[in-house]
Length: 124
Image (cartoon, rainbow, N blue to C red; front, top):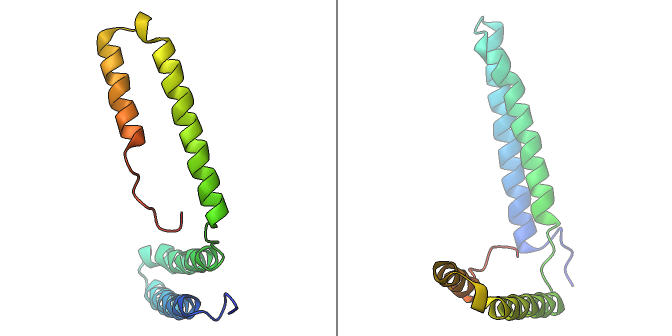
């Protein structure tokens, strides 16, 4: 098994990080030069660019250490969602006779939304 630091995705992330930190460093150096020349707003920017570089490093670390969801975890999540839907449906049916018709229609609409297929989010 490949190391997570030398996979194709990781190497692309490493290169993107190097490019990002290099660009932030050059922008910070440029802003320091402008600040020395007398542009007072550049003092703020000369602090801001290193902060952006640190945020890039944090994002790189988070993306590098993101773990994929296992099949077992995905099955457990689906079972949990199905159990919650079944409980909600049972509770809704138990209280359906005392429910306002417009509220019942709204709850049915929400139930239809919750059973609709979900979009696959990246990394989840």
